[in-house]
Length: 319
Ligand code: XMP
Image (cartoon, rainbow, N blue to C red; front, side, top):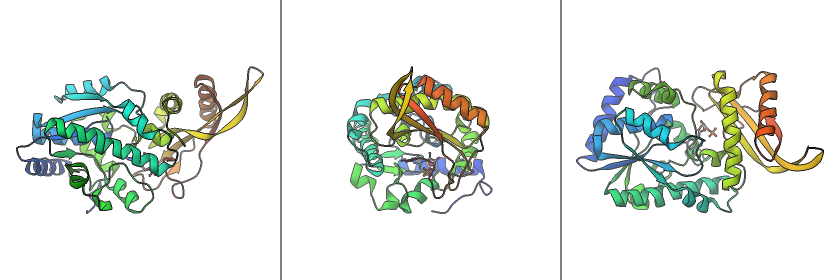
């Protein structure tokens, strides 16, 4: 698949081409897609909606590992754009699938199977759709094919036929773009700035921010630290920032007593396309404020570190 660089991208022409390609592929049938509210899935939703109107069924899958935002927010943003979004509660299903899993790639695989086989499999059957539209971008494919990280949404490039494996075809209108190109297309599609300028957030969501088992309690710890981080770092203009719950416990103290607690690592990245990245040189007083707030406001956390390695050899997420 040939890359379309942000410099070479003509958004209007790209949109026109993708809308007609979607119409042609789906014919007079139905398609479904999952909207998380991130840039990629939002852009795909708008492309699909332009091509198919009500013949695109859009779902918000509440998998229990998303950021602290209410599905109602995304639903209302899209309602204003004329797109109806149905919320599906799949929290128990995802936590059951991840139960007991500590290996990062196994965790990603459990999420993939639950999404594509269980949840989408069911939605496709119920709706009668034959196609799933999704926002895979070129960087997802690169890293998966290179064997670095199995991105949750890559199949064909790994020799997996979604139709045989899951019973539906997958359409990927953004596959030639990287994040900067998707932002440009998302803006041209009329999405609000709070969406097209949104920080990237990975498909495996907070499960990618928890080293070791992703239990509801551990995800909640990462979620609460993320809320604080997103508030404090919003003005930095960084590409992406994240709070990571480590598996090791460390000795701390609280109210004069031993508190054998947990450790959060903060990462904040400068990047253009996520292929390479370097840590932001955050002001020290901001780091201190983060440490103070997270240890005070998130139960059980007694230690905070700041990741200062570059990508490569690090990757941006820890899982
Ligand atoms: P890494 O950790 O591979 O991240 O350096 C590069 C960019 O990709 C995002 N990321 C994902 N996005 N599905 C996605 O849609 C995934 O499975 C996934 N894993 C990582 C990550 O947040 C960063 O922006």
